[in-house]
Image 1: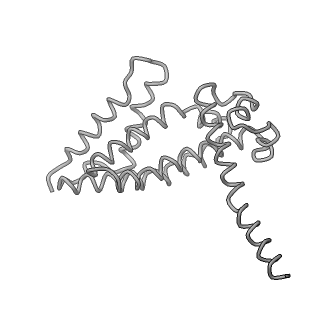
Image 2: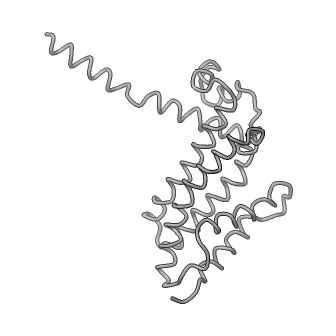
Image 3: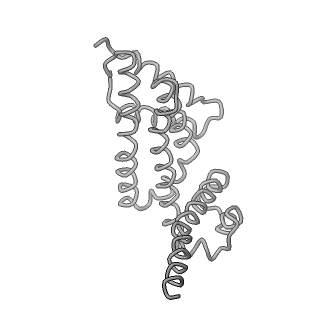
Length: 199
């Protein structure tokens, strides 16, 4: 009898493993969507409504707005980083994977720029986020770039850090100009990078 109760207890506990993580992920996705449409100063009640939870649930996970903003930013960076290997595995060619990932990265920069901007008053926090961003995304870009260049037997004219920096600079103009086509310009940059140099 004790063994049966022990087994039931173990099963009950195992069913709840991962629930808080899934719940937090849903909150971060809801917050990210609200931030895109309403900015990082959007009311917490809007995020709660989007996530289908009470306001108290948001504050239980993220007691302050800066904590929520940092968590959303990191969540978005992780999603972008995770997409790289997946695209490389699923795309017809490494170049296609690189171009798809770069398009995703541009979307991240253009639509999520308010997340990083919200923490600019805290230079230590901003510096830590920038370090995290670079440390997480440069290797992903590097892997995609290396695979794409190897597939056409070209040597890289520039490293992944500078490719990402160049993309970032091209995306800056999108903030205040609806006619500015950052995505098109970035793909032109990628074409230039892939032209590379003969090995």
